Image 1 (cartoon, rainbow, N blue to C red):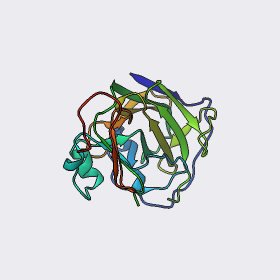
Image 2 (cartoon, rainbow, N blue to C red; image 1 turned 135 degrees about the vertical axis):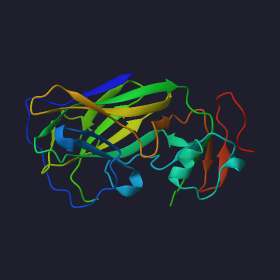
Image 3 (cartoon, rainbow, N blue to C red; image 1 turned 90 degrees about the vertical axis):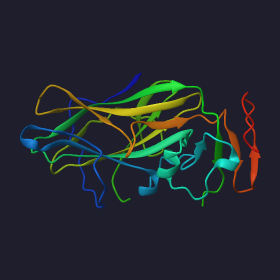
Image 4 (tube, helix red, strand yellow; image 1 turned 180 degrees about the vertical axis):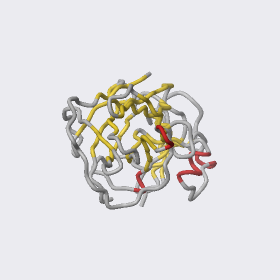
Length: 239
C-alpha cells in the first residue's frame, strides 16, 4: 500500500549548505550522459541527531527467546539475525544531485506490507549533525504521511529542490503500533519539466525497512534486569 506525501506547488526555493560529509549512496537514478539525476543516502540514528526523538530509539525486537539473543551485536548484525525496530524507525534522507538542471521532488511515498506485530523479545531500558533538516512522520498503521516541524507538529506540505549546488535533508520518523510493517520509500521527481520519475529508497544492505509494534513482544528491561511476558497468546520467551 502506498502512503503518499504530496509536496506543495508552485515551487519555492529551499536550499542550504550542509557542513558534514555523508556516507555511501544507496539509490540513484542517472540522467542523460551518465550524470546522477537524484542521489539518496540513508542515515541511521547513530549517524545524526534529530529533535524527532522517539522513546524507543535504537531499541529492537528479537524474534527469539531471551537466552538466544547475542551480546554486543551491532545493528547490522542484529538485522541480519532477524531483529526489527521496536515501534519506531528514525532515519535521515540526504537528497542531492550532480545534474546541472534543478531536480524537483514531487512526492514522497511509503510502500508498506503489514502483518501482526512480531512475537519476540523487546529489549528496552537505558541503552547507554550539524545539518539543516526538514521533518516528516509516517503512521504505518493508519496509512498517513505528513510534514511536521521540529516538535512533531503538523505543517503545510513543503517543496523540495536539489541540484549540483542545492542539497536537502529530510528526517523521517515512521511509527507502528498494531502491525509488523515491511516498507520502502518511493521518491517521485521531475527534471526541467520532464515526465515524473520514481526511485525506490531501501535501507543500506537490505531490501526493506522493518518496524513492528511491541504488543506481542516479551519486554526485557536491561536497566533492572527484568523480563515480562506479553499478554498476547504465543510461546513464553523470558526463559
